[in-house]
Every structure is written in C-alpha cells, then in structure tokens.
Image 1 (cartoon, one colour):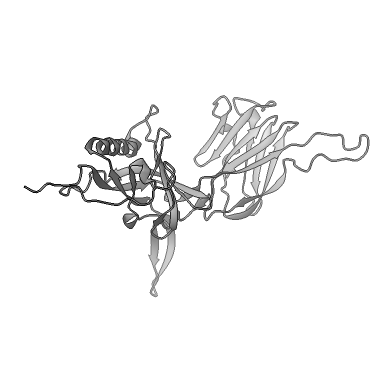
Image 2 (cartoon, rainbow, N blue to C red):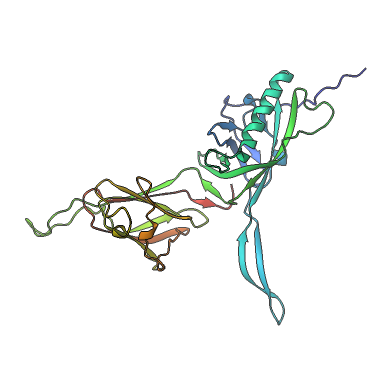
Amino acid sequence: MPLITAPVVTPPDPGTPGGGKPIPLPGIGEAIASYTDPTGTVWPLSSPAAGWFTLPDGVSGLGAATYALTKDEQPRGGARLRNARAQARTIVWPLYVYGRDHMEFVERWRALAAAFTRTLQEGADGRLTPGVLTIARPDGTSRRVRVFYEAGFEGRGQRGSGLVSDAAALVLWCEDPYWEDSAAIPVHREAGSMVDFLNPYPAVSSSQVIGATTLDNPGDLDVWPEWRITGPASAITFTRGDTGRSFTLTMSETPHGPLLEGELVTISTHPPRIRSGTGENLISGLNWPGAVLWSIPPGKTPVTFQLDGSGPGSAVDLEFHPRYQTA
C-alpha cells in the first residue's frame, strides 16, 4: 500500500535566523517582508528559519491603488472625468509552512492563523485592530500598509498536504490602499528666548522661532498631519501659504482656557479631533465655519505657525509618515 507524503519544497537560504533576507517579489524586486499582528508581535515572512516563508510567485496587490472613475458622457461624444476615488486594496500573500514532524508543523500553522485572524477580533474598546504588513528594502528603507485578514488560511486540500507542510494563500484587505513610510518625518519649531529689542541695544531672538517655515513631503500623496502644541499660548493659527487656507484654535473659547507653560494640545486633521493633555475635547475652540484643517501635499509647502500669548517653552511639533502608491 503506497504511503501518502507531503510534497517536498526546498526552502531558500535562510540568511540570518529570525531576520530573513531579501526575496524577489513581483513588480518590486528584492525585499524583506514581515507582519505585525494587533498585539505588536512581529512575524518574519522571508525567513525560512522561522518555519515558514513566502512563495513569491503568488504575491500580488503591491502596486498602485485601483481607482473607480466617475465619468460624464459628453453630448458630442466622448466623456469627461468628474471624479477618481481610490478603492480598498486587496493583497494576496502565499505562505509555505513546514515542520520537522506533524506536531511542529501544526503548532506553527495554528500560531500563524491566530496572528492573522486576530485582526477580526474586537479589542477592549470594541474596535477591530488591523495588522501591519511591512516591506523593507536592502537600503534600510521600508513601507507598510494596514491589513485585515479576509480569507486563505485553509490550506491546499491536496493529498499529502497538512502532514508536515502546507501552503496558505492569504487574502489581506486594506481599508487605506496607500503605503506609508515606516519612518516618520519630525518637525519642531520652538519660541526663542524673549529679549527686549532695545535693551541694551537692538537685538532679535533665535532664528528657530514659531513663524514661517517650509514643510517637505517626499511622498506621492497628501498627508493629514497631527499637530502638538506646547504652551504657553492663548490662540494658535496654522496657515498654508500656497492656498491661504487656515484654522485657528482660540483656547479662551474652550473649557480648558489658555495653555499654561508645559501644557499640551493635540490637533488631528483627519478625522478632526482636538484634545488637551488631560483628554478634554477642545474642538469648540476652532473658528468654525471658516476653519480648514488642511493637508500637506507632495513637495515643499510654505506654512506659518502663529501662537498668541507665547513665551519661553512654547513649541509646535509635527510628525508625519509620507504616503506612497506602491510598496
């Protein structure tokens, strides 16, 4: 009677145990892949030493986003594009899982399945938390996208599979179709030392003051920043120089009152949200309906920060991750 055995797949050179080495991925070349589950555990996807590795021939969905185009037919023929909307991204990621014996394989298979499907379990706040797929390049740069498990962890269902090895073609769904740089770009502007202009002679403060500056976004797409303001300050105005769009937060019109030295306010532009360092909702202080919580487009953008009632210690901080079309 013939024995049923699993097909033999020779894994590639494992490289550094636990770390992986570049693997060829369709359309993007060599890269190192990893997955971070909602608990923060990192799962290498290109290190056979872990007991699984990526089958690159089936990887897809790493290119530019897919768009739905809204078109208006023209009376004299043809059409005019009215709107383009990026669609949610779907990534297919095949994994080959194996073990030295059946139970080692099963333990690895179960652990990976739990790590990916955990994105569909509600957390303590009642929300679903995505995992993060990260693609790192040989030069040390990396891009990431947030993913939810959709399907694919059922194995091949062929004779011999599921004994000491099997393959899963994971289907990962992304709410936001765009990739973002894993490294954030920080911006810090702080009020200089306050001096009397005429005493003892004409003088000015440090050049690193809150005022006009230029933000550089190296990505392909707009980013929606989160601003952090450190007091003292009584009113804060942010103006985008190329469009003139601006918004002002007047602290005296909020339950908190003016920011004292060392106190913090965080302004999120998408979705709109303003919180004090103690969690107070301060959105009532915005200058509605004229407030425009603007984004930062690709390239260089002139902006102005104006803090009324500022003093030593007053500062504006910004941190953003550039966004890209492809991995």
